[in-house]
Image (cartoon, rainbow, N blue to C red; front, top):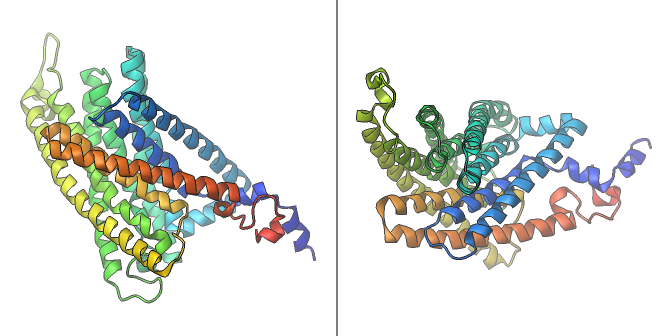
Length: 411
């Protein structure tokens, strides 16, 4: 008797807040990478830079809005939030999407604001923001996997819980490394600022990429396990889009190594009355060029692996879509479906950069095709998300916002 009044007192807004979770941050990170790509792609037309800025503004607004909503949920529903993060690897891993979204925003500040407004103050501001982004990325890459230990046990082992979204913390570190290369090329920084930033960028790649390799192996083991129902084997239809996350670490590592390597080759000589290049051998004038070219070569190699995982993900997604069409079922969509956007974007961005380094028409055409499909994917996900939010189905309101929570089936 006493529990029923409490259920009816819960408002639709409170129910929606209870169903808001970290996967919503997949939206600003996917939107932000499109802004970077549209700004950087070689095939420009009148107004494309403005469109890139609009995507960036959407990235900023959604990042700030979702951060506020998440803060409210932590304050009002702390036990439920930490229970979800501690028992669901997907919710834990999507904490890294906050760092990714912020790093992409910093990249756009460097690409848009610094060249337009200029000045040492803006360059220094971007430099400071990057260190904040790097700190967040390191915290995610080191801390979030520790949450997996409890969450994986709670879900019955890695065969049950090992999905590609567990690689998001690695993508966070690699995105910060990619931002280092972007800022080094677009912001007018002193050599004393560039050197530590580029070195930390290399360290971030070393921090994340080996972990991504190990998680790739574990996911392949999961795929090869004998499976019944949802245990082992391919991912279920609602999660199939997350397969594209497997491409993310390699695509972002490719762009990071290419851009950092290019920045290394352009480092200015040590100035001053008593330069001593031998005191810092790694960044001496004799070393920076070979290191930079080796880094760019590593970026090309990483792009090859990214192409494999991109092909693998596309094959898995198309196979599931054909099954859905054959059965005449509706296409499954949930907030985790946004997982397809950002990894597709970083693979596209790496292809754009590769086309510039190699002066390759093939890479330019391929990257343009990828950009067009990426924008279509973003528009589709945005339309389905807006429909789900307005109807309430993505926020636990199965019968809409105006129906009392007791009839909505809200807890």
